[in-house]
Length: 352
Image: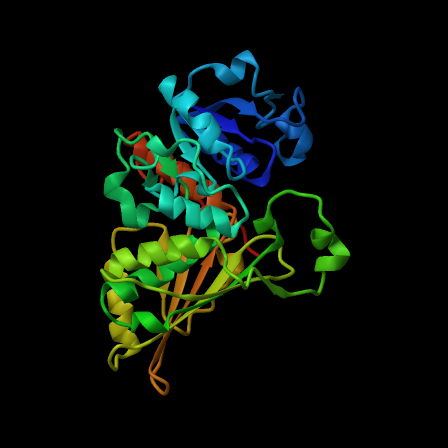
């Protein structure tokens, strides 16, 4: 069995990976670590886990936390993974970090990201950046191997936008100067926190755009799309929060480079993702939405060509807490240890 630590076990990302590890046929959580709720069983905080994940939460300085494991999931805020990873790697533990600490391979790119969210641009473990791999398996599967030590799990908005636009830019179907990402997320995307903005009366029947000056996930989106296009790509990105618990809907636009039918674009998308179990491509008439990916590791893409205006429109649906977080992390773990990519993730979700 793969022995896994969950660091930051009490947040949404921590409980999400704990749920998935419980169902995994070849992995188990051996330590649930957090600075809060020490000594309490995880099921005491999340009653739906009663009888399934009753392991108590331990402190970061406890003996259980310092023991070696095969992999550590850092379900922690920015800045924590870079402080803890070297010690984990010294124990022979692979690291999958949820934050932006290891999504970039050089100090300059990390600094750009950090400044967007008001963090110190200095990386505390710069020597680890060059060897880290961006954990989006659909684009970086060949780089995620048993030799890989550090994975930078992608941001949730980034997953939805990159998967939605990668086939279009890779195949030269759109003008890369025309890309627009109009993204809506549920409230859980902000994490588990007490804040007036997330108070129920402040969120019910309320929608608003935020971070219009520059969302941090734009760094990932532009980097990955630039790699696919083999040229510099810039996007117009608007993030919005809607009165929904979980789920992301990204409506993505681009001017067609030359006239194309929806059938032609669908063919390109389905060919691009032919080997990717967790990306499903639909035509413009498909009746799909956020509820069809809720609780799953799937990304549903609805491809539409507006022949009247000459624009491509792709609607990308993911569960921000699964494909946008814990599900991608588990998918990365499977690849790190040579397991089938779908292990522990082949579930249909729940409807309605």
